[in-house]
Length: 617
Figure 1 (cartoon, rainbow, N blue to C red):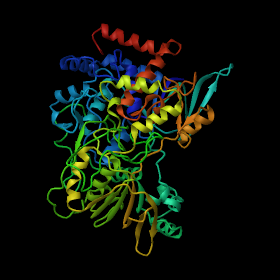
Figure 2: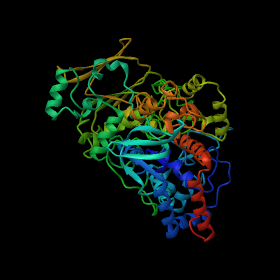
Figure 3: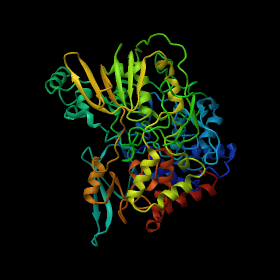
């Protein structure tokens, strides 16, 4: 029987496992500890990579005690696929947030040691304040991936992810009725037994579909996109027409577009992002070292990485808009999640709008566009994107890269331009104090209300907004703010999607309708968590489980939850990298307390033995 089963191989569970394996972890919620010298970190890292005896002993300990299950079969695969599909050149989180548990400055040292400083993007729209002292830069996607890969190698956890999907959890009880272990049912018919389970899944299993779709939601969403499960493409189109639904590829949610782009072979984020010269990463992967994790195609992984409103956020509320009346610079507020939908970080400072500039040449289709290859966008298309978060900006770039001539962006509230996606207090030097204040709110309803106030809805970074300036200046991108969409339908006569607003002021006809409306963290609708609710019911508030302070599902359950579904305990940013580090620290401490944790004591004894011999640590 396993001591620990980790469900999901995303940043949440990777942070947890590395923290369990680290004999001297750094505090998760502060950068105040003086950084280790670069030489000290490099010497330690070389020992971790090179000591064969230590690595062999660690591999044996992991094989005996821990298993990781993910549909991708690799660490961070879902994260990489999403970043690659959406061609995201830089993270939204600052460089102090990463998976290395030993030192908050590890990623910075990693870049400097390999001559890859140019892959770090400065934050020019936020200044030093009482609440935020930096770091004032964000890592490139490739740099972050390679740093993750180096951590995976140094801590000897490569190759331990089992390619499978956990479909249900069943408690095994002792004679006195207490939960003694869990049986995890796998999609291939097998099962695993473990004394402790950590559920570190994202919320992209439950895409948020707006009410205005009405009858268009009657068909299964994947069928609308690809016709999968219906038969051939021709029969799929015929079935859609008979039901009054658009043909496959005309209506899609953002996560479906990500899956299709991955399946079609999305380019790296550093690639050019379309005919308007939208920002790709500057420079290549740079200097040597830290080879990346193996890239994979589309997968049904439950790993973290999708944007979520944690049951709390509205679609859009804003401190400033981007129309003609918008000032050249404006105060920005702050709002939570890292990955793709709304990348992680804090918030605050000032964001500057970039002027339109001169109009570029008309857009030309990009032959390598993954969405073009998948038949989801074509030359001359008009694409309507509903949603005001960072994903909507990435989708606009993908539309133009696929040859679209026009994009109409519709936001329910005013467009918000913000550096980070949570209030600055939850990401700056006072993060620990802010989380403590959040936890002092009595009752889940009060915390849910605080989450909603902090999140407010989607937002776009100043850099992403600036990268769309050429398209806005050319008249190819139209932004319609404060639009309450009343309905959408497929007009088979014209072969177009029709969208109209509640006040009748806006009526649009387009070739494609894309929904950048995020995900809903609703435990009752997630298949795995629904099975856990059935086996061991706990209260829900706004779709979120009411967990114990140490993120345990229920007292004595032996199941812990990380990510968006832990937001009532971890606060705003539960899904992003800051939340991953905080959650990992809490669960690691809890696991160490349970029954003295002899399996972890054996690990520490192994590490002390090798440290005394000059290996490993």
